[in-house]
Image (cartoon, one colour):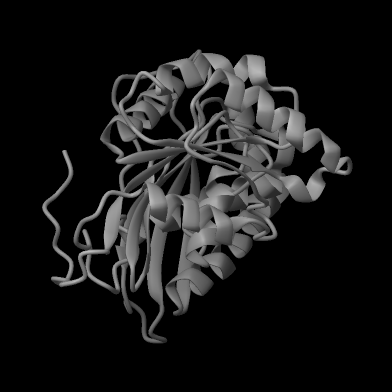
Length: 306
């Protein structure tokens, strides 16, 4: 259920507002689109599929509309409990949304994979739009029209819009289409509201993004981050103190994450610290530890705390 509108009252009967869920397979650009629309980095981005593990809310608004955007984990066939939780989180967001934007890659022959997901999504009584993302990577633009015809002939999308979440191409037209599909109503959030996630959540995500970037293919998914301590202005120099644990499942993964003489975890920490300071707009002292917690992705209790 949606919360009652808490934004400032508006007398504009033309004002539109609602929840938009971004949906699609892993790595189609949902998080990149969220960041692009908000002009703010809320969701971490890596080349690895299944990077997004939690639904992230970001609020876009202008004088005529407010869109509460839900960036959801990619939808795929889960094989582990953590993956099942991610997919369940995605569908929970879809059921709660007022409209859905399905993303797929422009020019890619992924219709067979998308069809199964779309059949489930179209069982929900929601307006659904389609964004063909990554058009900036498409060399042969003539592939767009037959792809648009394929999807439109099989599913009744309200609109189909080619975009590039990376460059911003087509996103103005996309926003116009989303606003048209929104129901009339007052703002759901105050004018300066951006997200409902606490700073600790984004700090943990930034550390995880830094670990993915530094480790690359060596440690793909069996890594989590838990914030143990977060104190603002705790030191004489006025820095925030953040202590976090990087969770892995095996001793060999711990050795890789630490690196020779601790060089890898130091590199991860330095990269993460710079990003965290940019995000918080204040200096921080970041302390990272690595801990083996066997099968943390498949256990019933989530050890990640924000």
